[in-house]
Image 1 (cartoon, rainbow, N blue to C red):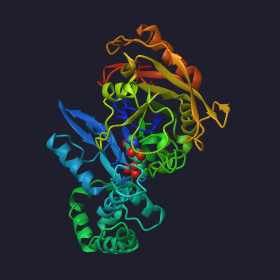
Image 2 (cartoon, rainbow, N blue to C red):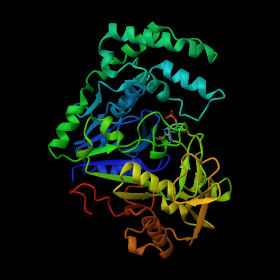
Image 3 (cartoon, rainbow, N blue to C red):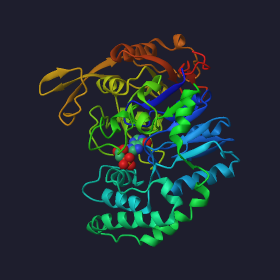
Length: 428
Ligand code: IMP
């Protein structure tokens, strides 16, 4: 097996950082294909924490090539900030970190528009990183691409046109449009740092896949935040589902061998939008406090709730998930009760489907499962888990018809049962 996509199966924050890090050990190349600085995960470098939003965690493995694919929205200032942090920690990236010349650039006016909108009545709880407005420019065919930074004349023209298009919007939101020249100057000042990274990355990814290298496509956010398959309009503006790996990096569907779906043992969501299994009680607080459910980019407390199996079945289908990596099951230890949503009641009728168009009125139907109190973080063998934990996992497998091949029982890398078995060199 050589090319694998790792994708979040819920509303993001399923614990991708750790699982991708485990899988990356055997990867020759890690490719991010969607989203931008709205994502974030924490890396530990020589004992010190580093939060990266754009650069894949594979950067810590010296032999792994890291690609920011053309499906991404890249804020050059954030990227340079991450390069500075890597420099400070003596992590070498020259010649193995590349960003697509066709990835779109998040400019200061994108961040301004995102922030102004979030202060108004149409707020949906974005990360305010300018991701949505950047993709709006991409779809409107007036975006600035990373490769455009190398041509000052073209850049000035593109920024001028975009600022002119956005000016009425910015004024209507109560602010003043930025000076075109100030935006151009600030972007050009970053070019010397970025030039060595900017490349046509699709042939690099295609070459690695053709050579049967181990290529890991790292998803951002989660399936339920996908622009097409998520809980629209409370979604991000990119293709976070596994299919995004193709359009966001330049390979065809037949070149992806396997899809590993990341599933948190309960649900969380940041920002607005429907969340039928949400808990606003002590159980929800337990999940937030024990699970440390605070956004790594914004620090916002995450909304928490019971596991939603219809949503998971939906995610398995739209991503083509082959196996599940189940994370944070240790957080459920000590819960006074344990419920799982098994189906929905919509207008008086029960359905096994995730009623994505009726979530405002759909009523979750729960099943109670046995609780446990044991600390399971030291267990490394699935058969040694307490019976209630094994039942919880089997219940998921049976209901979504997908095997759980990796179980994370704590935040650190070794607190893991099984490996995903995704690359041949990983022991299954
Ligand atoms: P945006 O991607 O910043 O435009 O935000 C759109 C929606 O996606 C909001 O509900 C955000 O909270 C959510 N979102 C974006 N990125 C992430 C992420 O990495 N984890 C979880 N939620 C995210």
